[in-house]
Image 1 (cartoon, one colour):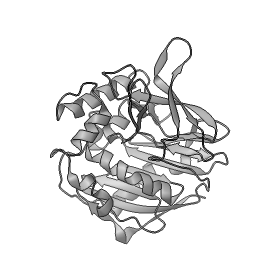
Image 2 (cartoon, rainbow, N blue to C red):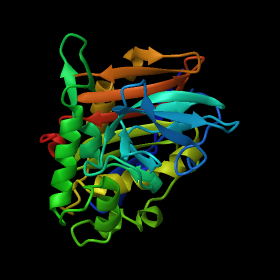
Image 3 (tube, rainbow, N blue to C red):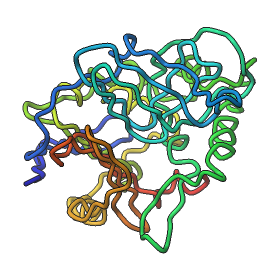
Length: 310
């Protein structure tokens, strides 16, 4: 049975963010790799005969270890355009998956070369084009609006520092990470500022005194490998550096609304299953292994102020 333990006496401040470290128990024991260890994967355009599809790419894992790519991760390589994952994907050894993605490089559709691992996209990009379905009581990607919403948000981020030849989010993030507009405390130095505790495999990040993102992995190493990129992603969206603490009651209320005990199956295969949960204010997505044990969980506060325009 899954349970959550807070390190209540060891919350931290990183710039304007209030960090709540967590230990999750009862999760999957499956071993897997996460970014940035994805250079060994093969990414290629998916083509059923009518030309490559903008919203899907094929990933092949030639290794003996499963690879988990969290939702919101940006990938490039030999793709005709750089993409961002709409949700988390687990690629089994010697297997291929078709992943739902969105383009984050609008000005190119052709041969080129970019970094395979582009890091995690800003939270506002990842949350774009997700809508609440009243009939199911869950959030999901709105296929009719997702791509346009993502392009619109990338354009907003680009306007801050000027146009790029291919409107590439990878390039925007790489160049703006050295800009005075982006808090340095949340960029390259955040790894030094953030203390990872023994046994910690999850985190709740709050901004403006309100929970923004909860995330957990079934193993500590996966959490340690990705947390820097997650905090960096959030840095592109925040608009002030004032630290406003979050109360324990607000955090517990957010977790309750994430409905972790009432997740509903969205799609699955023999190797893993995706589940959705939450409600009108919290958007929860989880992956389980073949035995139904949790591998990865994210819960996003869709009612947070910084997400109101996406």
